[in-house]
Amino acid sequence: MIFKVHVLCIINIIIIIIIIFTVIKRKSLRSSPIWKFFSIHGTFVVCKSCGKTLKGVKSTNAESHLACMHSNIFSKFMLERKKWRNYRETKNYYITSIKTSKRKQRKDI
Image (cartoon, rainbow, N blue to C red; front, side, top):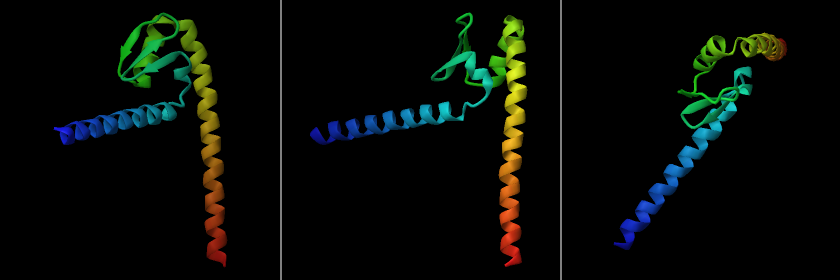
């Protein structure tokens, strides 16, 4: 009996740890500017402007909501997304060019 209780406690602890790491990972992956306008609550998101709850943690659903319901906020989002994409492309280009130059140096040696 005691053994079963300990096993159940261990299983519950493992499940809690998995949930915590999933939430942390999910939040760390959310770098799109759309998440400035929404808050993530597990498997759904809430619009900070009107409080509407959307199923799923997808940026496409959030973008569609802003476009349909909050056109003024959506235009701000589009400007921020453009800046964010330009920054991301520049950052990726810089990292790629550094890696390429290091490979060329290794081949020359």
